[in-house]
Length: 131
Image (cartoon, rainbow, N blue to C red; front, side, top):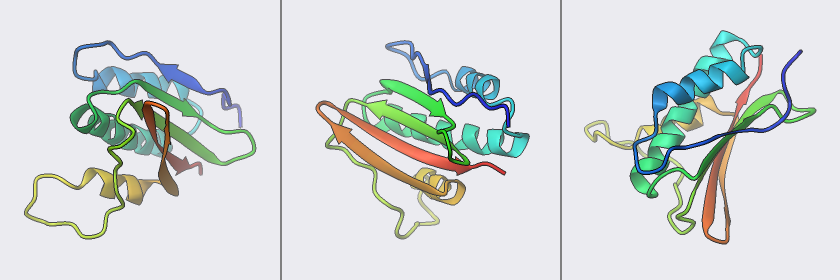
């Protein structure tokens, strides 16, 4: 398939909002061999996870993307430093609310997603299927 299977991390500038356009360009460069639809899904999903970390968890510590060996998925991982603040599964959406659609998009796009915590950090991850 010709896809780089190593995990690659994006370096976030401190003290400013995440540069979403730069992040999308960074993803396109690293995932150039997975197909346009997968890249578009990965860009949308990553933008949602990064924005959530920025708005609700005092910023993003790190973003990683990989195509795990032996698996037909793109894996996105977003770290922040608020392990106690955990996103929750979408149960019911209020159509009049301006919020609450980000994780619904993550659920719709990914084959699975979840949250891992450690000492002083949280990782929200999601996997996008490869065609």
